[in-house]
Length: 115
Length: 113
View (cartoon, each protein chain N blue to C red):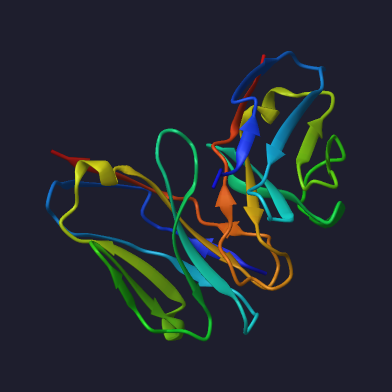
């Protein structure tokens, strides 16, 4: 069965622009979470979506937003990009939210570079 | 608050040596889950093991073994007879009943042939 698919894999943007990243979870998985990975801050939780609703949000500014569609695919958007937004953005897919009875499967990530 | 500490930033071992990666966690929850993930250069986090707070039974899976001790809040991971393909960054993670993971800072393992 297909794994978690993140597109694009690599992205270069200019400061001030906005960007949209996409994540397709494993078929049947309804929960999608997003993480930012940087050398300085490590892996940090951005937000989690389940059944098209944001269930949890990390400590990131409002420039970071997301949504989930009825087919469980999720997108995250970063507006007014800053140099510090350069990072690997990872998406995690789990079978259900609330009861942690399964592991989270991660995609290969989108490496965003802001210049 | 939840916190995971991986004190070892980088470890180098010679192939076939055993290596233990340390993980210490903090949480006030009585129900929680601990994970180990491996991150190769490709970037994807590869799931290795999950343990819940009620299951302190240690586990061995091939060359991998895990030692979970609630008394010391530790969840250590050992690779026996290490191989070059084991070179990667290893992350310990904690979550409660939600899907928000708290990751350690990772341990970069290099296995030298």
